[in-house]
Image (cartoon, rainbow, N blue to C red; front, side):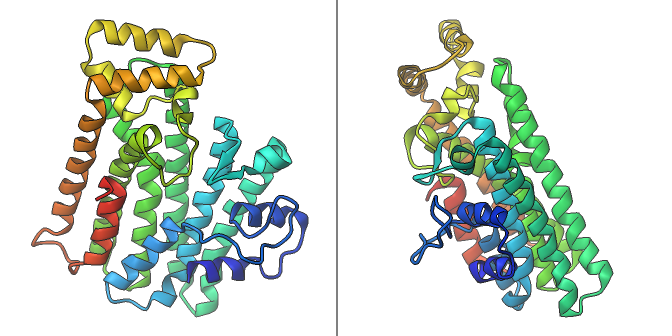
Length: 328
């Protein structure tokens, strides 16, 4: 359903710029030719929007436009992140900027953001009041700004070695949690849920985003991140994932000095990534980070399922959230 909503938005758009956007969405190859059998996409944000609506007993078809909008904002951010990080590949495909250059990638990313807003503006065609459409737009724009704030914070932290866990959590809540919370909040709107329920779901999504970000940091060094990043890319870019922050906070002086020397290098190399990983393993930073992700999720889920919560059980939604946060 998310895929159908996305494709509908692009049906009447043939200008070459849209080919770059459709490549990002997985529908075209590097030459701009439509794929006969495109890969099965991961539409996490749109899917969570629909699942939230379904969990509240709503008509899921009403949630398709906001689901498409949430997904397009994610893709907008992804295009820009790939450029910022210098990522040449993602999900085993060359990134937009690597094929068409940084300037055109910026155009494609900005275009995806505009398409997200148009998806919500199209809700007027379903006879929704203008005030309701504006409320959707404000929700999406607030989340988009917070996402950009989180991206700013993460880039600013690349050259720092004094990052506190509390600062990391704030960054993760903005960079990842804002859009997850927005997707779930809009799913609640589409279901006709009361404001209290929509707010509870947004807060749950924001905390889920923190746990998800921690988990992606773990997977980027020891597993398979949902984001499809190359192994060790975050370390090569001097990003301080949560396991590294734990090592800097809790490790002995010798470890802090060695990590400081590694990250002070002008350019890091794959052997540096392996050394960082070895240091983290010696401190059990992976296990501690996993425990933190589990704890963040459990606290968020407990609040979500509290007796005073106006929501139903939402077991399918909780199962997906649990896997994103803990991989269990």
